Image 1: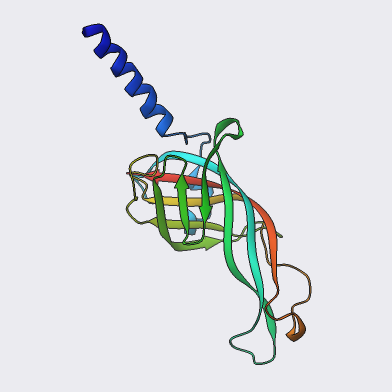
Image 2: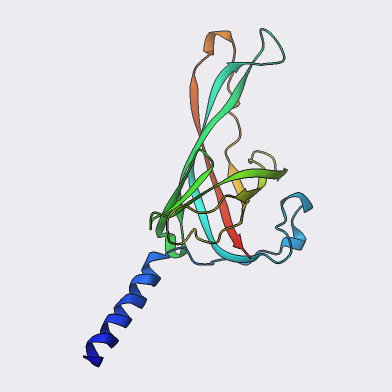
Length: 179
């Protein structure tokens, strides 16, 4: 009976470890980041992922300038990778980060800071309480760092192209914090 309980306990521990596939894979020096995207004091890094995907833009009329058009952000979609390029979740409009274990978190953008030319800005998001049990439990802030690509298309957006959509490739590290 004791042997069975020990095996059951070991299996439960392995199962719990497998249920949280996103593990810290990077160190972040918040003091070296632009102040706007630093996490508040007392937060600890829980996990980090790299998102690889696309941002959709749509050619729309500018709200503040009749007759002028611009590429407007519609939505992102990305696969989240952990250590060893293992798929650990997905990121999509909301914004929503969903772990492969089914837990997910949404949030509200608090701030952005410029990235290098041709890359979407760095970002700080305040997370809402997680839905479901798993890797997203306890996440309170999310940073978007090390961005590559993702800016609006450089192609013409005018009345003739109104309503057209384009996807732009991007990559970013998403770093999750909790207290």
